[in-house]
Every structure is written in C-alpha cells, then in structure tokens.
Image 1 (cartoon, rainbow over the protein chains, first blue to last red):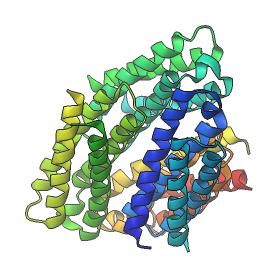
Image 2: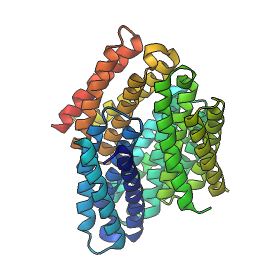
Image 3: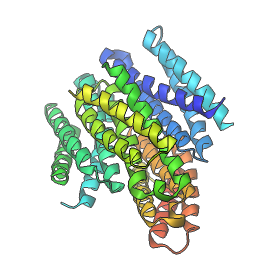
Image 4: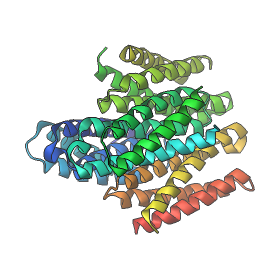
Length: 107
Length: 107
Length: 107
Length: 107
C-alpha cells in the first residue's frame, strides 16, 4: 500500500460520505436519522483530515490514519445496516476500502 | 470593527450552526429538512474558512468575508422562517451578528 | 462544464497546493516566504470548501465557486512568478484549470 | 471536565496554532522550518476536527479527542524547544491545556 493510494481513498471516501449525507437528507425517514447523518459527517471529516496529514507529509499521519480506519469501519457497518439501498452499498464499500488502506498506513 | 472580533464571531457562528444542525436532526420534521440542514452546514463551513483566512492574516480575507456575510444572511433568514424555536432564534441572531462583522471586514 | 468535473478539479487543486506548500517549506529560501506559503494554504482551503459545497449540492455553490476562482487565479500567478521550477509549474497549471471550471460553475 | 470547556480549548488551540504558524513564517530562520510549521498546521487541523466532532455531539468524539491530545502534546514540546520566544510560549501553553482537556474527554 503506498501513501498516494491511501490519500486517494480518503478523498473519495470523503466525497462519497458528503454526497450520501445529502442524498439521505433528501430521502428522509430512517435515512435522515440523526445518528446516521452524524456518522456520515464524522466519516467525511476524518477522511479529509487524514488525507491532509498525508498531503502535508506529516510524521503524525499514522495516528490520524488509525482513527480514520476506526471511523470508516463504523460508518460502513451503519450504511450496511440500512439494507438494500444502492447509495448505501456504494458508501459502505468505499468506507471499507478506505478503512483497509488507512489500517495499512497506520501499521 | 477590528479583525479579532470578526474572527471571534466567525468561530462562534460556526459552533452554533454545527450544534443547531445536530439538534435539528434530533428534532426531525421540518427542522430536519435537507435544505435547512444543508444551509446550516454551509454556514458552519464558510465561517470556519473565513476565520482561518483571518487567522493566517491572509491578504484575501476580504473575499472570504464577503461570501461569508452572504451565506450567514441566508442562514439567518432560514432560521427565522422556522418560527418560535429558542435554538433557531439563537442561531439566527449569531448569523446576523457574524454577517454584520464580515460585511464590515469586506468593505 | 458539469459539476462533477469542477468538484474533481477543486479536490485535485486542494491536494496539489498542500503538497506544494510542504515541498516549498522543505526547499526554504524564497519558496518558503510567508506570502507564498500563505497563498498556497488559502488556495488549498477554499478549494476544499468549494468542493464540499458542491458535494452537499448546495444552492450557494456559485458564491463559493466565484471566490475559489479568484483565489486560484492569484495562486497561479504567484506560482508562475517563482520561475522555472517543476512543482511551481504543476501547481500553477492546476490552479488555472480549477479557476476556469469554477468561473464556469459560478456563471 | 465538561465537553463545553474542551470544545472551547480546541477552538482556541486551533486559532493560536494558525496564528503562530503565520508569525513563524514571517520570522523565518528556524521558526520557518518545515517540521515546525507542519506540526503547527497538523495541530490546528486536528483541534478543529476534534471540536467539530464534539459540536456534532458525536459518539466517536473520544477517538478524535485521543489523537488530538497526542498531537497537541507533540506540538507543545516542539514549541518549547524553540526557546524563549513569547509567541512560542503562548502556543505551548495553549497546546498543553488543550491536550489535558482532550485526555480527560477521551478517558
């Protein structure tokens, strides 16, 4: 796993989580529940922060990658629990991929 | 209007908008509508960006203050339109105060 | 110009500006001057903010795209004024491309 | 330690670190070294992220507080190592205070 790929995954995961939050707010119902929207916003923000640490070539990027992996994993599980929705599946997949690469960077 | 006060207003407005978004998502109903939550998140983010430009002592802070004033004004109107809610009123007041100080900084 | 392409340009410009700032700080000398590093950080941040407004599908994205175009243009000029450096040229090119797409989105 | 105080410390630490980075770039010399500026920018960003998680009332705020405490501690040490400078001392003190409150929130 090289750092460039991990940065790319964090940026994509950030984008997908923000788009998913907007789309869930439009849908309403269980998709717009506070805990779900909140987790998507958490995940978007920590992915952005994690990417920025790597883009700055920071010595501390392992710490931010570690917490990013943890939050992406939680977001993936939450999206999967929403059932058979296309956007939820896409978001869960991206979160899993980002979590995996952040775990490798943090190792 | 000095810059230090404008920074303070932007940081407070950012905080109030994020808290208000979280509280609106908890309330649900019209408070959790996509356009309302979206505007609160927009306002929180541009306030943060505007504060950061001033904290960096950027020559370009007038441009970010100008757009911050515009978005705070829109957010204040939206919060007021929600009626007699305490949190909405508090958020609208803070947005108005931030808009006013950003307008002065941008002048 | 579709919005998806503009988001992509903002995210890439954000990344290139942060990497360039880190590399300029390593080089030192005129590359590490406060005004140059400051402008790169300004440009990185407004690109991120502009991308996030579009990712949230915000009605106000034209305003953030407008100020993003202005700041990217200033950053491009500053990078070009640094002379024949590869990284500076790469950053200037990306800033021009991002400015152009943001101008079109703001129109 | 209540959360409100920790949010306030994170926001103040974020502000002080950004101002300190700008002032160090102006001073030049060892103050403008890549590792020092980079650490100040890292600290500013994780403080902002940590504050935002708490403002959103996120269940995951302990994880972001934990990494924030670690990075604030590193930044405090780095600022202290710069010697007898007023701004460095002010920044180190704020970083220590923020680290302490984030550690308590993370416990």
